Image (cartoon, rainbow, N blue to C red; front, side, top):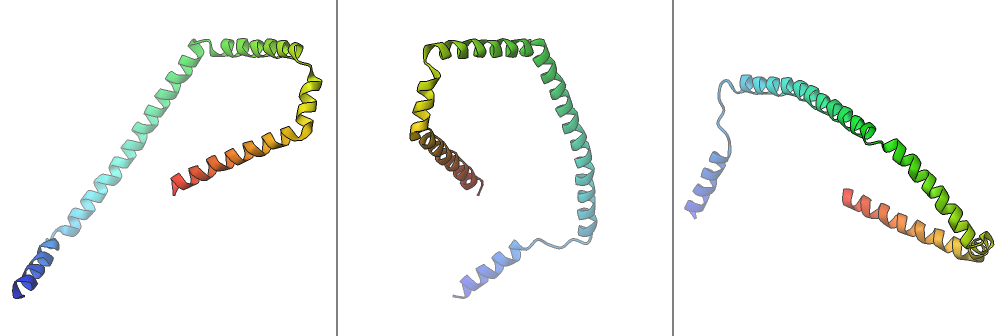
Length: 124
């Protein structure tokens, strides 16, 4: 039994770090270096973000995104006009007024609530 007590006491002694006379000066020097590094890191991250934003904006402008967006809006209008000719609006109104529209809205609300709950559970 004496060996077990000796081993445990020996493990405790080796688990504690030795105290050096200049430990406080070492801690202060390391903290000063870490704080100085954060300022440089903030500037580098900010510069990289700014450069990325400028590059992304130039890519959007050069790819004619706004012209493509206007074309898509025009296509959506044409598609909507074509669909309005295929089925009359009274059929849609009568289908939604029969209670189906409310059930669709309730179903979508339940699905949205499920997504929100799963996101909260992931964050916890």
